[in-house]
Every structure is written in structure tokens, then in C-alpha cells.
Length: 316
Image (cartoon, rainbow, N blue to C red; front, side, top):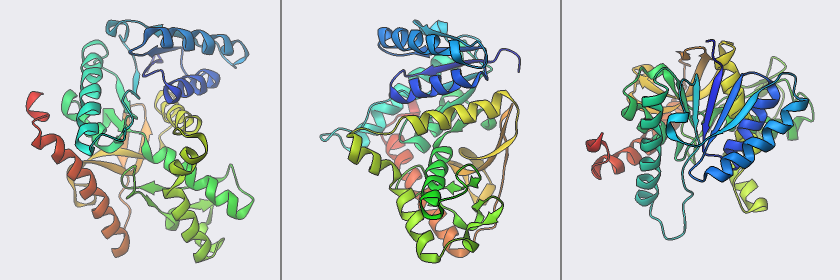
């Protein structure tokens, strides 16, 4: 991978935070910010570009004004979408965001046909499926971000309990990026030590519960959703791709027989490198985890079927 050019579609709080984190890491040569409101993309691109004066390497940060400006990118991040409002049904939100993601994906398909796409738009697992259907690309080139964020939230909760190992905690959260996510303490550790040998069952159960409600806790205080942690999770995944690090990161990927499922996008442990999803790691689930994973898959399928029943996929 030579170009090291990244585009972020959606210059809201999450997209801008991702661009900022990526710019300060010095991982890529150029970052493009694209938004339905060009002035927002331009203003934030200027602000972030000025911050790079103190970064370890020079990174060009600029706004993409037209869809054709999203050309020859190595990675494109999709954060575009709308939050659910009080008068919206689940079907309303799904159809609106699927339409937005479809339009953006078609731009990417035309102008950056060799890119890896990182989907962040919600509902994440369903929108990742939409990107797969719109592109028809090899499944390794499309990744959903959810697990990287959820795992960092689990690591935060572990630190709250232990008081140590903040940078040494390796958490795994699988399943959907929503109410049926599965924090997985059995394969989570601090400094190489299994979590189950450091904390009590009661403490671990509390960590699991707080991880699942990690996003809601932030909304309670800010009255809006999180952006710094999602932004850093995005940049972390991009760094793994551009540097071909082959890092194990829980990610939303298209399954093709893994875990006994096909044609579904769901969070699983993935090896992330230059080709996107280099490998899906199949863990040996116990019966309880199998049941939780099945419930998570079913919740994603139900949302995909809402789009299917509405004729969304017939238009592709």
C-alpha cells in the first residue's frame, strides 16, 4: 500500500475526531474530509491541518468538496447518517441511513475502486451489510468498526475495577454493536493474565453490564453520543490497515461459514492488515455464548429483513 490516502465521509464529531487522531499519529500522507455541508468539512480540515504542525509527521488534511474528490483512496470511512428521532420508527431510521450509505458507497465504488471501506454508520452491522451488497466486493475489503469501540469501553471498565493495567488490557467484545453485544471476559486479559483470575464473578458481571451500556452513559451526561473514543477506534483500525500490522481487532465482518453462519455481518475477532480482514478467528464458544451469539445474529437479520421487505435491495 503506497498512497496512504484516507477519506472520511461525514465530518461530524465522530468523523472529525477520527481525522484528528489519525493526523496526530502520522500514519497516512493525506486525509480527506467530506460532508453534505462542505463548509463544515472545510473548516474542520483547516483546524486539524493546523494541529498537524505539532504532529510527528506532516499529514495533509483537506476537504473533499465533490464526490469525485474521493479518488484513489486506500481507505474510506463512512460515518454519515442521521440519529433516530422521537417520531421515527426503526424502519424509518434503517431506510434513511441505508439510503445515505448506499449513495456514499456508490461514490466510493466509482472513484476509489481499490479502497478498503470502514463502516461506522449506525445501525452498524446492518449498514456494513448494505456496503457489501452495494459494492459486491470481496468480503475482506469491507469492515464494520463496532467491536474496536466496545472493547475499549470494556477495557475502561476493567481499569475502574482493578486500578491497574490501563494500557495492558486486551478486551474482546463480539456480536452486534447494540443491545445484544457480547463482552467476552473469558478471552480478555490484563498484562497477559486472564481476567477471570484477577476479578471476582460479581465484578466481571458488573463490567459486562457497564460495557453494554457504555454509550448510553455518555449520552446521559453529554446529551449526545460519544466521539473521542469512536474516533480513536477508527484511527486505530486504519493504522493497522495502512501499516499492515495484522492486529487482532474485534470487527464486524461478513461470515461465510464461520461460526456456522453465512450472509451475515456481525462482530467477531478479526486479523486486520493491508487487505482489510486478513482472517476471521473462530473461537470455541460454550453453549451460553453460542446462544448469545445466535440472538445477536438474529437481531441483525431482523433489521436486514426490514430493508429487504421494503424493497431496498431490489434497487441495487
